Image 1 (cartoon, rainbow, N blue to C red):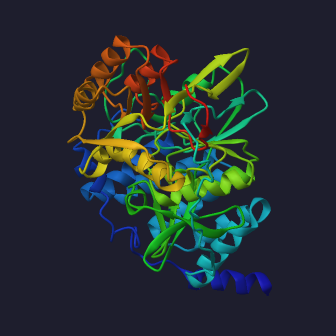
Image 2: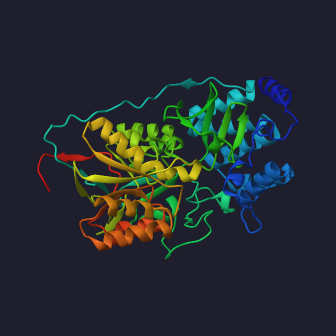
Length: 480
């Protein structure tokens, strides 16, 4: 009788008979329009990649959802454990058939009780109970002597070896849907070239480019994917390790066309992008190091949270990491590295700046990707505020890439020996390279630059003159 009642309930639960019911309200073409790219998935292989490509096509080009469903079902036959549960959730979200959530529940109940509870609730009631907690970054001030005469930037650092576990995001590591590169989420094939479409001296780009280099050392690398985000009071949040939603996720990451919408207010994010999405898996997987984007407030909050747990965070894309100045003791923005004796040594590439030196600081008022050129100003204005030091900051506005020469011109005009900049391309690189070559006393603080080949080159070509945006600056009352 018990099993008969269960079968009857399953039949009554049924499905909505509407494909992608909760996803259809979103504009999945947003990122494509911003970056002005054309998608071409004609060369993808593997059932996961084919299914995701078909899902993207269905959402963006009004294609056939049945094509995606076909390949997701084929992938089910090849999967087990977590991956199988995620596929059941995927099919439930696309087909509207809530029976798939029950199948996911039966897998999760043995490996992740929190996820099991959510799927069971979606199956029974098409909703679920949740917990939310606010995480607010506190303002931290340095207590400095009035005699402080110099600041030392770049002393911070750490080492990583074969004992470490690195948990990273998926986007720009093993997958990049925006440049039509799809494969298994946890593939061992690390990508190094993305929507930019070109490379420089085989250095590689973004998180994938750096992780590929890190892998000269035999640490454990785990990918975080299949993370839930919940909409609460109009904003989306990813969870901590206890399943408490805490870290805000920007809207542009919610409308990735590979996301699965399990309910109107619940999304399953497969192509994770940002430290805010990595906390849950990082704690579950006993990560010692986490690597992801820090280009939003929620991502920096997550980095600080992980630091509190003793976990180091690499944020090479670091626009908002300045919010952690003086308190992000284990977070590192745009940090260079070198490999010695089977260890990766991060940071520890310092420069000294007199408090009364003029610092030429890059800024911009442009939006979106160009806004990364604002990062140096955000950092140094914050530093001036929380130290109350009389830093002489000369702000130079640029309209985007290729205008770094304006900083060099201002430095020469004012006879200044310190520049704070962001380097993206060759036009950013060349004037700074020449300026550093001209005088060994010239020093450069880089932001949002290590992920890109030309920033990467400057760190290594001028290791005595170039440093990163250190979160734990040292101060001295002694002269240079």
